[in-house]
Length: 617
Image 1: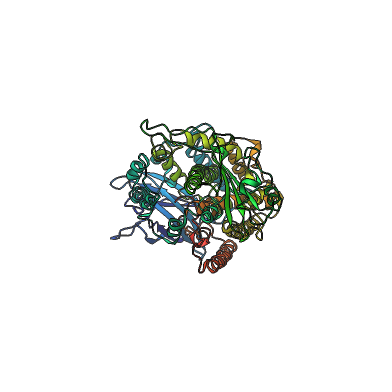
Image 2: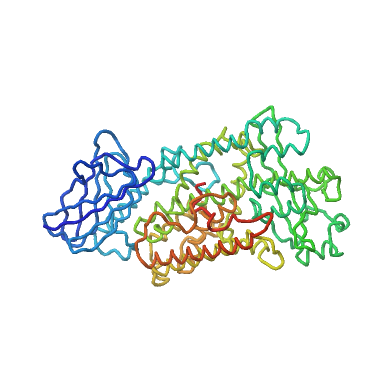
């Protein structure tokens, strides 16, 4: 009788093992086997991190194996099990891999198919077409869209983390990690002490040093020692945590009535301000998004304030960016003066502090939350709803969606919810942060997520004119490495533009993003469909770059880009493409490391060895 060797790999995360009964059935082109209990006498099967092998003898020839069915039945109590993969050695010596990388909860069953990536047009056998369809039907019931707040991108339909599908919840290990990190952050930042400090007058600027008591590294020490200087202030717009707002000024803002006479002590080329603008030496950061946003009033005993500044900056003869004029609100007038470097020391310093405060609010709510976390969640939900596990695009993107929906759900529970951390610690809390996201949705466009286009749109693309913009330089290197990789993967599975256009699952994925993520807004520029291989590669680059590199630049994290510990792809050409991708990323690491040598203020946020695969911290 035919004999198969079945190898089962259990996950290594906490509580991944199980004591439940595990049954396996084989579905072949010539018939189905009976279900077989996978059990070895006097042996503890399916322990955490274990790889166990079993002989399965069947009565009849099954033909080509199409599917395997795994059933889990209770032993003592409900016991979740994380199945990584199953490999099957057939009677004729062939090996078939069945990737899973999923939790199996309670008494349930899952059906797996071989790991070779397939488009829908590649499936000609009815049972495989049926499996594909049923998988998506099940997922679409599990992954439902929900409007958390009007004007936001739609999110997952779950009130709290435990309501999420088990496969996208934090592992127990990761969940504990999240809680510990959250608590540790509060402890390290003395949040209660901060709140007390913010509610009382500070006697000296040296009080700022208390912020850095438990934060010690090269960058924090440089910032602590030089934060009051104009050079550091300008540098942070290029390479700080929010390097996406500065843009070349092509025309002085009408609502900033600054003149040459006002700033001539800052202009080093003996030219007028208008001439400096014409030469491309003037830059602007405009915080108009904050204009009209409600200030936090959740604590009646604490008065909080918001500014909506316009900051004019100048490229000096050393090619460094320095501030030359600051107006704290949008409407000019006697009560809204323009502050200058020639003003009294603390007047100018306080004006810069107000700009930094505004930068913080835009960074946290828009640059970080909306434009990386919430956008990546949209891609993730659409992926789970419209792409089956066998689809090559699912296999490509799933690592970059890891825990994204879970961490965003936690954020809606603990951070941006009513009475959450935003309400307690931010001047935009109490609803202002919600208004900011709603307002910023008008500027959330597809082109603004295409890194090279976004840099060019702000006039910041000339490397000779602006030589110290490391966020741009490193970002372009990483963008191109990702684009080259996605183009290789697209070439492997899509023989022509027509195949792209006729891939209905792909088109449904793209349409889900447009309709639900971008709320069906034509002005967003998000495509409703994709018709060419080139556009598909660009789209996939946007998804991966947003979830990995862009998030790293404005947050910093773990689980590094180019590392795919879950082997969803089994084909050699894709594994070779992954190896080339990692080699390209390693080369970028070397370039950045060489540049950073001997720098007092190194920039490494976009070094691929420090870029997380997904936005999940």
